[in-house]
Image (cartoon, rainbow over all chains, first blue to last red; front, side, top):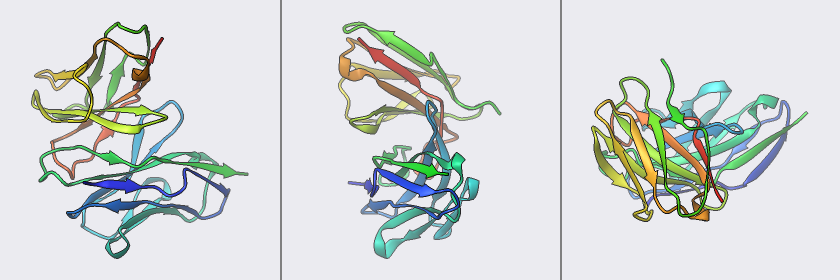
Length: 116
Length: 114
């Protein structure tokens, strides 16, 4: 069965510092991987997705993620944190159903705090 | 293009009642999925509809049901509400059904069961 593990339920960085949010996946087939962000009292917004076209994926708001098959990882990074990046981030996986379904399996989320 | 809309945004019910939540997908999107978000269980898949057919269902009791209309709008219904049903219910739409498809989420309906 597919799953994703997000290491660190809370991450705190200083404004301007590197953001690194960790995601490891488990999948018996090549996965499709997604990062979503959720601001308070809002739904989920897609940051980026990996669908095997390129291992380094660039997303919105300066975020990017690198797919590393050997490490089964898809960590999210941003070179310089901004106060507006404070939110909860979710890693998700799909792709184990022969392409016939949209079902996403989510990680438990990482709450990012940005200190001034 | 308008995003995914969900109504109502907030709802308070009492145990034993039933509730219906509505989701209007992005124009042109034919697939709608529903997720439940709680602090304890996180984000869990409820079900998915494409062209009025349920394509997949998560591990939830039969009290949770849904449907999709010919205009792709979807509703989910929870009967005999329990306290544990208190959650944020998120709807997502995508153009087609498929594991590479990007799902666009609505703002959610926050349900409180007293």
